[in-house]
Image (cartoon, rainbow, N blue to C red; front, top):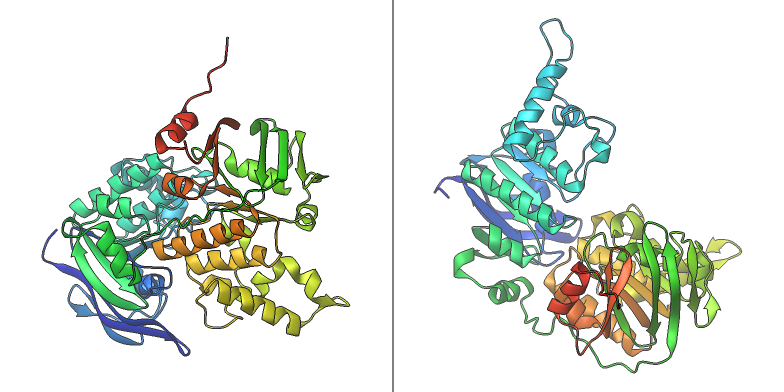
Length: 501
């Protein structure tokens, strides 16, 4: 890390109507450093990134790039000034090749006026090899993994001479191996003298990768610390302004009779002979490695995906195959892993999203009655403490944690008997995690059965009454809360069960 400030923000403000998204944001990024910006959902991180990337213009404060004042009117100006933003979900054109994506808007031409595809291929190959991830320049972007798409985005930023690279939740959808690869690329870019801004909720990654941490809260700057001079507990306290000692507030619940019974469920090539029950008041967690088949099992139970054999019964009543509407009528709710693509209508308001699953109950003669819809939405938004401008605020304008609360509100409004939650706290901050855990525990306390999928072992250990470990589409272990440990969960997730002779 050098003493050269690539980027400086001092007292930056931004409001949307009467709501202040940034009250006073400060950030100083040095050349040759990786600088984490962390805070609860709604702290202002996304707004800050959008100002740096030229998507928003600040209302006040200073924005300096290499000592010179800048005021970007659009993303093109920010890119031209040497700023690149790598988002959690890359924005490549799926029908174009890797090389075509890398050179969009700046294609090279031969002296005869023809597109110089040979140069595009050559430079693409050189750039991806430089990053340690050789990718075929002619490969269509549609077939790339999220991790490889991010590599293409990073290669694109390097090819246009970006000095500041912002990585906004880049590891949220990556496997452990892919995370390590991305962190290696980030370190390489830092060592080349570039400045990186790293947005993440994962403290292990922040402390392993970053040199400096800036904490934001409620749109304001709180503190900047070197990673070697602070602790996770100190950062959490700065983020939330309160102690979050009880991150897993598991209440003792009265576990009753079976609510759902799954027997010998099989989907050829996906999962095989899966059987389990979830009782009222019980939290059962499907644990295992990414790709083990946990989400596919949950989707089949709810009726989103088909299955070849087996049965699902809800309170003794057969749940029809591939019929989510029937599952909902029987009292099943489903919070999917991908809240943006599967859980929300992103351009619809909070009110519409919360009431999506109960609209039939709110209609009279085919028309939604606002006097019924508005109180229901407001009740759940208030109970879940959704931070929003108004009930008609579009879901896409909310932070990730508040989007997750709206998805939960949608299904809680149905008064489910069984709630399936797939990665309920992925990509949300520690304070919101504690709120979601408290809510799930309270639901179990009221007799709701919960089937939870989580890739975070502390969450599994902290919330589950029973752990079902899935490996390659089969349940390899059933562990009660008293005997479930990270070690035996991981052993069952990575080892085939022993077969008696």
